[in-house]
Length: 136
Image 1 (cartoon, rainbow, N blue to C red):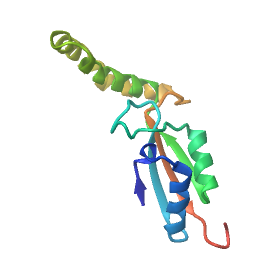
Image 2 (image 1 turned 90 degrees about the vertical axis):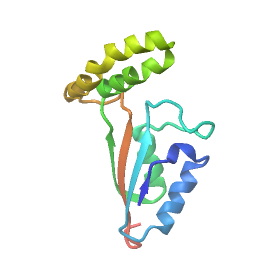
Image 3 (image 1 turned 30 degrees about the vertical axis):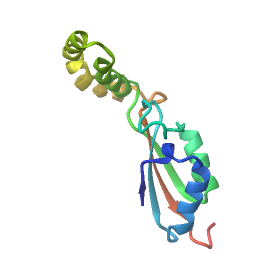
Image 4 (image 1 turned 60 degrees about the vertical axis):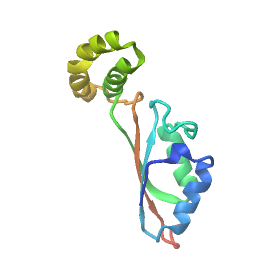
């Protein structure tokens, strides 16, 4: 099962609990949630989650073997911010900015190898498994 919309639901704990209910025992959940991401699909963009919040939500919903991995680190986040910055400027400046950020946008993510903590990240990929009735 795959979900990439947790930030768009009004009651994330209830949604995760229901996903756990309908998932067969041993079934896997793949969840992708943004962290440092711009508002999107407004006005229905309600939440941003930390790795600790996602783990807590998943465990409280009855999932086991929870893994939470950051999607990039500081430099990948910086590259995304630079890539989107021309949209905030008037057309002539946007073109200059676009030319100035093309190379850094492709090179900056390579520096993420040096960011071991990944506290600044685009989001998280979570994998969890529904426990069997005997293990829950």
